[in-house]
Figure 1 (cartoon, rainbow, N blue to C red):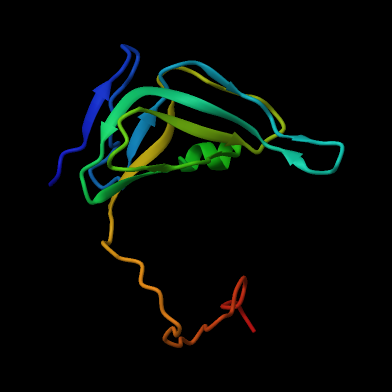
Figure 2: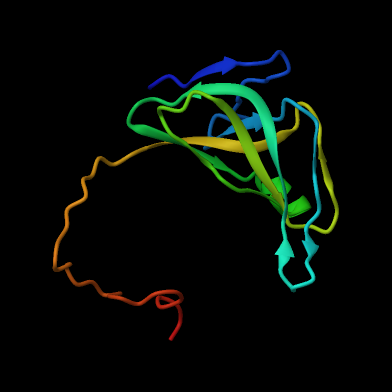
Length: 152
């Protein structure tokens, strides 16, 4: 097992925790109070999604050959329509981990210090190299795009 090194940057920071032994991800906690604005409809008909960066007060050292994936918490998603935006931590990043939360509801959402706001899953990376070619092997799907594998 490789260690996930975590550094507290402020006293209010709480280390990531797993709520059960079979949890896939570590819960990540807010280190500062934040209001995530509601989404709104702009004059041009587009939705302006409410979003905010949530401070965790933590920096991490993801093991080499791995990547940290920040994901939404199902409870926040289902109950409050909050989803994680940008969500990758490279192994060489050493700055504060901040969580982008998007608020798809019509009401602002208050995040308090100590709230669980996301989850972190550490995943292995495949080592690949880019090789230019003129031909690709065929597949059953071929060039079929969006929705091409659904019911026919």
